[in-house]
Image 1 (cartoon, one colour):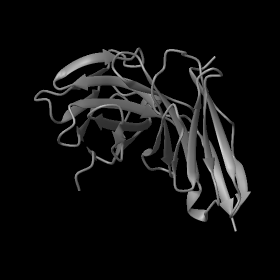
Image 2 (tube, each protein chain N blue to C red):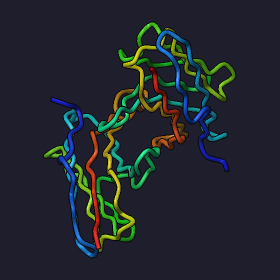
Image 3 (cartoon, one colour):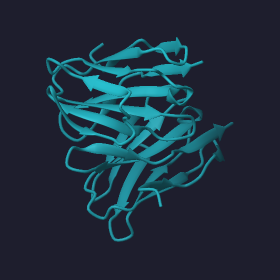
Length: 110
Length: 111
């Protein structure tokens, strides 16, 4: 089993839709979690850190469920510009390396 | 631009040649990471520096790979005797605490 697993994509949604991605992690000792956005042939860009209490940034909401060992990302009112691959990442080990999921591709269409 | 920079952005090399990549982190960040990403996968951790000390290396980092950060600022990643399986995007990231910021990557193609 991979340390970090994500919903397989792609997700094809119309503009204005709400879409949610889940990501599960296997190491119950993990402390920090992140969502990154990656456009085609570009580097991952930090979208949000995920806090225990959940956090919101505009149309984006991230939540953490420690009991079930998953994090989620909710995107409301999808825009064409949200089309990208969304990577979840878990901070692992004493030296803070990130363990990434394989990513979930989102395609928002008119 | 005060973000992470990497050079070169693209490198095409023949199998068996040596290549070297450079990463310049965000100036106040003392932590520097190298990752490798292949198509359809997330980045995979290769190695980590805190200042000039290399503190962790992945088992993915074979003997042909070596990384340095001699003065605790920029870092280099060298691959000796490249193989076709080394073709990937090599990403560098830096951080001060938990959040890591990535450079644009070096895309390596081994022919």
